[in-house]
Image (cartoon, rainbow, N blue to C red; front, side):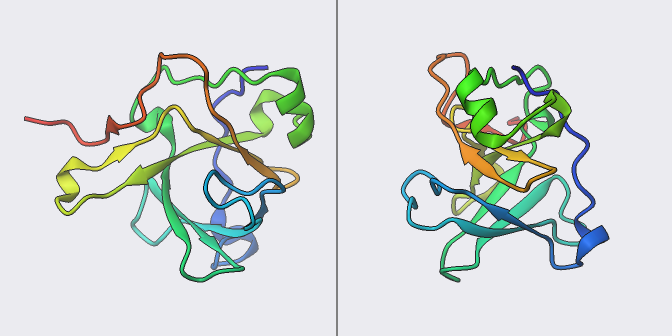
Length: 144
């Protein structure tokens, strides 16, 4: 299954504070943390924040990878789709983690380690793409 770019959930429809997302296996390097709040700051599009509700010191900046690479696709295995309970490609919200260095003009996103969230069940998983098609550090802003 290759998820289609989902219409992002309305983060203010349920709560102005965002939506709860559970990662049963955690995120890479943070496997013990499973409960997160996903929210979009006012005027923050296309960036979103993923904040651990178990450890307030752990948060991530995320982005819809299609805003960086228009033809971005995540080929999910049947096992990955079943683990997330995905019944249709449009149930998947795909995000990638952003790294913001000292100079924000050089921020990058990790296209090789996307986060997939089932927008119906709010269950998520980070996967590692075996393909060498996508870089670990893809520039977000166009460089001059």
